[in-house]
Image (cartoon, rainbow, N blue to C red; front, side, top):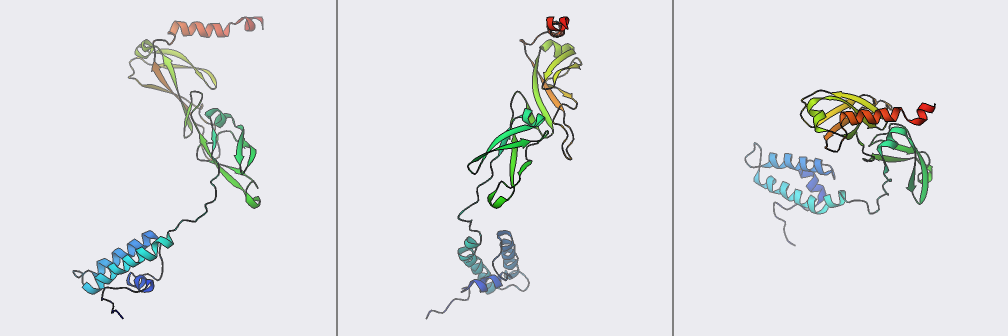
Length: 242
């Protein structure tokens, strides 16, 4: 029978004891225990000893080979992840309904106004055994709008001269036309904030704002053309007849 060397560790129980553990441990706790044990056993440390130092290292290697792979093994069957409810900014603004495919069924899910990315929609009794299912929400950019937190972002073309000289402009937003003034001499990119035109307040979240980035464009209507467009919109034959 072969005699074991001074540095050999024959069992996991002995290996755990050398590291100051009573049994298997999670990765971080195991690493911390090894570092503390090997530091205390180092020959240069007070009370350290070369033989114990070698045993601590042998214990660590044994646990690495036999214990950790079992402790960290992933389950062979993972439960399916719930589908992500992907919507556009207008859905987040106005709420409504969206069709969601879940476990072979198509469900009509109600969207509340002001739902944000990262929130979850609760489907009562839709899971196995009548359990509730929580579906994560993702609001993607669409219709020229991007959602960031509580706020909406869009861009709007303007003439370079308007940015240089300043003046009044009209912006077509999701809530209808809005007027704004810009001062002369601003350095691009120029961004305007239209208060209260972001996502509506919901729960503890405040109402957001609409941020409009002005994009210099030679094709954008001039101030005079913009005024004519607005005049034409107001004084249409239908409105005159009314």
